[in-house]
Each structure stands twice: as C-alpha cells, then as structure tokens.
Image (tube, rainbow, N blue to C red; front, side, top):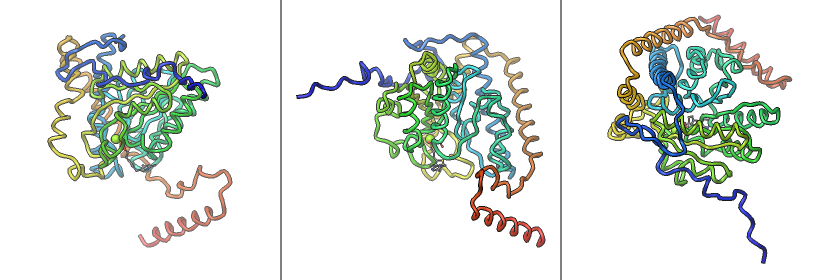
Length: 372
Ligand SMILES: Cc1ncc(C[n+]2csc(CCOP(=O)(O)OP(=O)(O)O)c2C)c(N)n1
Ligand SMILES: [Mg+2]
C-alpha cells in the first residue's frame, strides 16, 4: 500500500475563511478590534476613507443622472458597495495595480482617476479616457471575469521582473462561476503571484441570486481549491474591507502568493440602468440592507471619535460638486465618435472579410447621411 501523499499545504485548514466575515464596526458603528486584523490608520486615513465613500456615492448619482438624460447608453451603479471598493483599494500602495470590472467607480476614485474619464465607456465614445499606466488602474472590463486573468498575468510578470507590485482584480459573485477567474486563481497560486482576487459578493448576478450561483459554503471557501487563503469581510464595513485587504497585500508583498477575498455586501441599485430589480427581489430585503448602509455606519463611528465636523462635510460637498461638474462637462463635450473606429486596433493584419464588413458599414453610413 502506498503511503498517503503529503498535503501541499502543511495545514489545509489554515486556508479556510473566518466565519462569520471579519467585522470591525458593528451595525451601530461601534468598533470591536479583531485579532489578526490590526488597524494602522491615522486620523487622516479615517477621513480619507469617508471622503472617498461619500464622493463615490455622489459621482455614482451623477452618472445615473447622465444616463437618464440620454448622455450615457447605460450605467452600472455601485450604490451600497462603497465600503467594499474603497476599503480594498485604500489598502494598496501607489505602485500597485487594479484591474476592475464595470462597477468600480469607487476604486477608480481612490486611484485618482477622474470619474468623467471612465464614463466614456458607458457613452460609447471610447473604452476610457484615462491612461491605465498613470493611475495603475486598468480599463473597466465588461466581459465577466476576464480582468482576473489580466491581473494574474500582470502579477506573474511583475514577479518575474522582480518588481514590488501587488495586483488586485475586482470581480463579482457571478464571475466566480466563469472559467476565467478559476484559471486566474489557479495560475496565480501555482506561480505564487502577488495577486489579490477581490470578490464583491453583492448577492446577485443581474437577477440570479447567490443561492443559484454556487453550492460552496461561501465564495471565500473556493480559495482552498486553488491552495490560496480565503478571506471574508463584512463588505459594508470599510474598516473590515481595509484590514482584510491589508492582510492579503502583506502576504503578496512578502512573496507568499495570492489570496481570495470575499466582501459580503449588497447592490442597492438595479444591476444597470437597463434593469428592473423589482421583478426579482423584495422591498423587505432591500430595507434590511439599507439599514446596514456602509456610509451611515462609518459616519456614526467618526462622529463618536470627533472626526467629522461641519467644515469637513462642507469640504467634501464642494469637492463632490466639482467632480460632478467635471463629469458633466467631459460627457457633454465628448465627441460622438466614428462608428468605423469599431474596426481599428483589432487585427494587425485584418482578414479580407473584415475589410468587406468595414466597407459595408461605410456605405450604409454614407447612405444614411444622404437621406438625412
Ligand atoms: C462573459 C460574459 N458573460 C455574460 C455577460 C452578461 N453579464 C453582464 S453582467 C452579468 C452578471 C455579473 O454578475 P456579478 O459577477 O455578480 O457582478 P455584478 O454585476 O453583481 O457586480 C452578466 C452575466 C457578460 N458581460 N460577459
Ligand atoms: Mg454580483
């Protein structure tokens, strides 16, 4: 009889996520420190976390309004997910990289990207108007989960080059059922790549609830299958998402490889402006999550700590107005774009059928112009 094979990890249970999710601020905004998740934040950091969350909510509202005015084709709101996005991104350093999905306006703000630049994707002018290398923030990914592969590959490259870069991919609960994140997590694990897979479990993939998405005990448990630690945070607690991500960042920076983080949160708005969520979820469920609002909870904490006064609120308000004005200007001034650009930057050597299709579209556009 053969001897039992040694497990690849000395203690596989060390990869299991904590249960329940790590929470530092309870629903009433009271701080309870949790062993293993220390907070190293200064007063300015607490203020910044709040500022980014409030700004994220305001720019999100502005984007929805622009869509309602017909300026954007569609928009995917982050309402309710401010703490997940901001806490996670805040744990990264300047040289680190983020590969986002289409819902990550909050993370974009933390990276310093002007939100109006990103809205070009939703307007259809261009993929974005920001330079990913300047902010180390990739283009928003619409094909579900593809950015996890980009992140894993980038992290592997950074490791081969001996660079001190941690890479984070944001994706959703629904994306964990796709092949791309699976392959990304497996590759990143095998190569000990400095990559963090940050899942915002907002309970839905359009109309599909989590219960129809997976039979895994939690999304974080999936990490065990790749040999990477699964971490869980209360996604509506910005201090928890920060502290949990920081742990994953430290691990990645120390050369110990990737982690999978599940931030348990809720999408308060429709999936996108093209969706009607009243068809698949109840007002009771919505009310339950509204009571756990990430900004209100943090606000209570900050007030108690004496970190929030009228002057600071007014400052943020002013900043939010400026952001919103810049967003409007950027989008009102945006070019309508040339539909023939669809054919640019796809092939180095386009196949003949491609040229025919381009020519067909060109003729159709010309005919339309002649009629109007
Ligand atoms: C590869 C791919 N398949 C299907 C879709 C259509 N689609 C758009 S959003 C979405 C749900 C994604 O849910 P989740 O990953 O939970 O992210 P969330 O929208 O909740 O942030 C789907 C299936 C897509 N964009 N890409
Ligand atoms: Mg989801």
